[in-house]
Length: 508
Image (cartoon, rainbow, N blue to C red; front, side):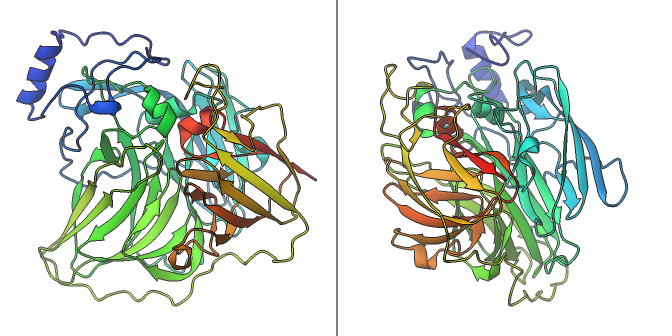
């Protein structure tokens, strides 16, 4: 049942399932029967009864959950540290030790905080009983250091990831595993962390920051992380509970009138975050690690799995007012169930004197646009319509493809010249949304057939992950400067693992 942990043993002194439910009730946690398509069993995965698919099962965190920081053991200009992936436990439910996978014992893992120009050397230790890698999502690192599926770190082994953070790379990134086919499980069991690259000339450096790493969680009836179901494989896993920095609906206070910079990461396998902020103003200033040309006021912002955003938020000027960040319903197409609205966290203005508003700059140091007259063009079609001999959703069946082919680590799907920009046409020929991610570079979205694209802050902006709705066709411009084999794939991790991934061979 459980590929990483083996069969789930009964907790010490455990009574039958009805006694477990009684204990949860005594802890103030409501329980119910099967959680619809989110729990129970399937034809391919045995799964025990799941906790209810609501956002009220876990206790609310009564304070803001700060993230630990990965310790730099070197001096200025270098970032030297150690990172280990291993099994651990956490008490999501009172008195219940839930087994997880964790970086340095925590989920999310420690925040990595470095500067442009730093020489990075991170010793990674694989304490799992599976092969794994560390992918530095969005960072322009050499292909040999990118943690791609063809370069696994064997169970019990270690390796050094070494690279330089180039000038112009300042932004919000994240890190997570990327082994072939086991990425989804390793991520939903807890392996993810935020990676911040700073500039010494950051125009928003005066703003206090709030790190917001969003993950989700599904527990079974004995308080352990539930295995994926056939529905998860088809649609991408969405947990029953949504967590912020590993906590459920945390709360905090803020001075009236305060202005903050929020670095938000969608570190889920398959959950789309349609973010709205009740009670305050919100401007988008950066997407996927790249500044926009100027701050853009928005009423909502959609983040697909793997995407990040930097938002500037201004609190009300009077005390006792609430800022509530929520994710509201978003339809991903086909027969994918629409996730219910979820409250993410709440911040209340304190009794402190009101702060004067901080003016935002009129312009930001966005990357320079790529040339319009490009020498090469690629055409890519994403599909989720294929059927294989094992039916829908099985690994390797060919249901999820790029240009009609499932991922083959030995095959090059596209060849590019290092440093030579290209314009690509990408079409989603499938029935549901797919967020397409490129390793080792950011690209510019220059056109889309989607009706509301003209009001989207992503138009003409740079990013490393773009969401395509069913039937949508886009044009992007991209350049990869360092040679080597790079991945591009759907960032719904279950789709990636089942074949919606390709290799770009970047030649000198």
